[in-house]
Length: 400
Image 1 (cartoon, rainbow, N blue to C red):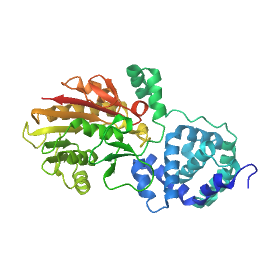
Image 2: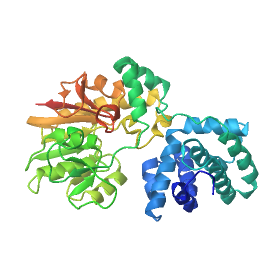
Image 3: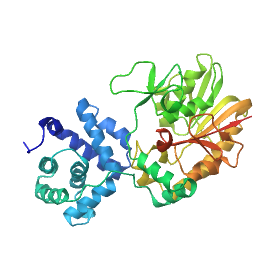
Image 4: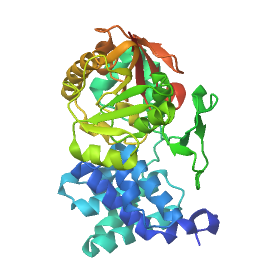
């Protein structure tokens, strides 16, 4: 035993070598194959114990949130360019380096566990791993602070919000999100003042709730769907908000869910069979004008409001991507407004925080901030991790 440490502090961490290996594999697939971390973590660890599932999640998201610091430490410790590493060895070193820099294990134990992890995948690389990790252990431990964001996004947010708020967003985006559920029957204001949103503890959930981020719950609430209404959910897959709308309209109402991708429609129909799923292009919707009481356009977007759940998005989205998405969002919004019946209500939402996809889209239309928690930003309402402890979501309303 390492002098001055208690077994309970670290022995349990050494019982899950497979969790480390799974985490390394997931990290590699996320960084090199375009997989989404939140989806892949769940799939890859589905047959593991509850303890190991938690370890895999903590390691994957820990590395992805601190990737720049972790990679800098490996480069310093190895004295070589990371591009010269075998990919599997590098991913295993990332897991081990993260534990050395941010974990609770005593240094000798963390180094030994890291060497074993590399040896299990690439036996000949064990000596390299030992040398690298020993040098990493000598580095000063970094202070976990804000997520590193693309320079263009930092500039945009600083211009719009100011430096302090932009940094607060970056710090909050590096934190673990709360586990939030929606009461399917509705309820009083709960988490962040959002109706029907409740923070849930780990463990089994009752049948009358659905796991859903509070910002998404707020978006569904903003639609204000009522029993018996005819409601359209545009770009509906995977169907979380569709289910919310279906709960609101009841057995006598109709929810039509449209998405352009056939596979996503198929998956959505399996998840929410009560809705009427349609394959269609939202820019040229296959419906008569003025045929819906309510329309939700949760538009395709850059997803930069979901960095707490998918930190890898910051590596994938470019300024050019955002411009293309904003153009699509305008076309979708124009088509969606034409589908509203007299006295109808449309909600435009995007789970991002870029000005191009939010305030600059709605300024060309007659939209106003939704009456939900958050702060008014241009013609909409902004929820964000540093404001409401939710995903970043921009929500605006149009009424005929």
